[in-house]
Image (cartoon, rainbow, N blue to C red; front, side):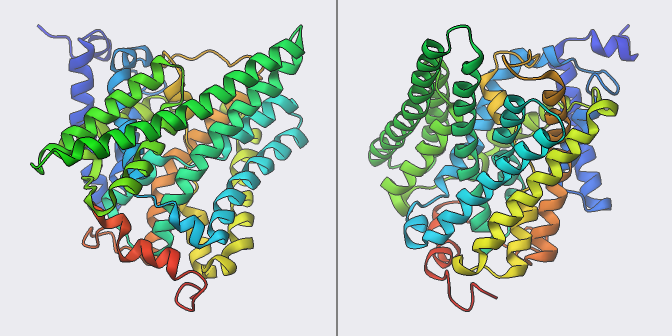
Length: 433
């Protein structure tokens, strides 16, 4: 007879165990959404956290390793969709918008670095935490926009800022590796090698993404059947992710560049379904369960002051960058506050996509206590981020009522009225409400 104890479930077939957790996640997420008005994304991550080794121990982190290709695909689907909603023309038409996206990310990283260094953390490790703190989770942003379907100035800037933050974090992490090489036995040769590797990752990821975007553009011309476009897009995401991993590039930057390039090349001909269809939606549920499984409260009693410093300093840095450029970029104070709150879920994708296993060692040169504080802060911000984003877009920005009736563009919608208003309406009285 089957063993229904916790030990029996842990020793069951990993696929069966994960399927059970997925069923539980869908049911519980919908119950929390219906009765407590919590975002479904948050409910899904809560189920993953409860099934993790720190709670009921239904699934070990090592059990996720065989699923990593599917999890990478789930991330890739959402990141590509984010890129396809971005129009670089916005930044050209509104330079202050570009300044806002860069400034809030950079100031958040600097604030976290200084806060940790002032608290006694090693400088190099504090800089690494600051580099990661620049980012806003693109998968949480996209999942929340799929659920609440807001529309307006804050929503469009949130999409753009999440993409820019991700790129800034990748650049900063690569720069950190160069700085960390100073402590090597032969720092000159080590820095040269690491610097060349960082340049290869950044330039190679961008070029691969551009090439994949143009390949999609060319292939779509000979595809008359509308149902074939999602298949082409999923195939592109798989190919781009595998090539980036094979060539030691950044899948995150590659897929962002591919989405942006496809949007620029194809314009309104580009049709991107949310999560690239129902298969992508299933993968997204699996992804957020996995994020919950990776939540870490280890050593919280010892490192919570550093974790709190990361959360507060990151919020202050992003708020300073957004409010300093709000009026000139065409954003009102209420909208600036909403955008600051909506950008709070921090991303761990740079680690997820770079690791071969979900049981990760401490990166070379990284203080283990600072890393644990960073993981704790990420856990808090990823778990509470969907609720903060929902409140910011509904109650503060008033761009969604939570019913899902207003729709963010799912085909060429990223180039429709809401996105045009971001570029063309910046600086007008409507934008400065």
